[in-house]
Image (cartoon, rainbow, N blue to C red):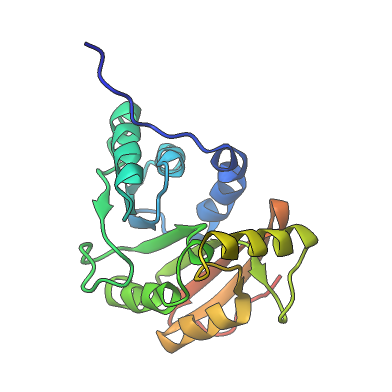
Length: 209
């Protein structure tokens, strides 16, 4: 009897993985452990681990279906630097990963309650060393306004799915990061009206896009 393949596929992951990879290749450390929060289908984890072989990639998620998909993607890839996923909620402390050299969160902040944002940076402060980075990718409001009509529509849809979900204000995310010792080093314009926010522990004012 054939083994059940539980891998999920996301069209958006296929579209945005290379632009995100270009940012990660530039800002992540040369080697070490990267903790990916909210790994979803697991496709990003495979892609990044394959193209960043000197880094050990730790995927994670809280959703059982996502964890099953990630597990099968890890097995299918056969990559030695891609670890089995860990299950945990951002707000649960302590995190099951005691130390990481960097953290990546793709499409996490808007698909979770606002409380998850300060929890993310509080958790990161406990596991990331001085100078380590946290990269958060997704849509953000800037100056209290959406950056594109499509993001306003997306925000409305998110709130209809769960009233706790929303496109976050970049300035509010930055303030939450600063309270935990992370400075916003860079805002990178990405395709489809998204941004990559690069935070560094102990970092001061950086170059803004």
